[in-house]
Image (cartoon, rainbow, N blue to C red):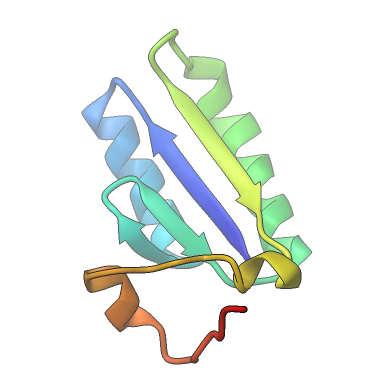
Length: 93
């Protein structure tokens, strides 16, 4: 699983990037997506960022990609709306 978080100063670029991410995962916060796919999907996202977005970055733009392994999934706590989105039950020690 990957978590992609972003912030762009340009509304147009922000909107375009969110539409791109919607093809690969689902939105868990306004500028945060959860991607439950393969390394190939991650590489597609990285290539898109490097080719389409990074050349136009300003000091106010950023994209963060976090890879979460199986061992870390057990440590994710979700409350409120986020807790209702999960279909699988995760047990905590």
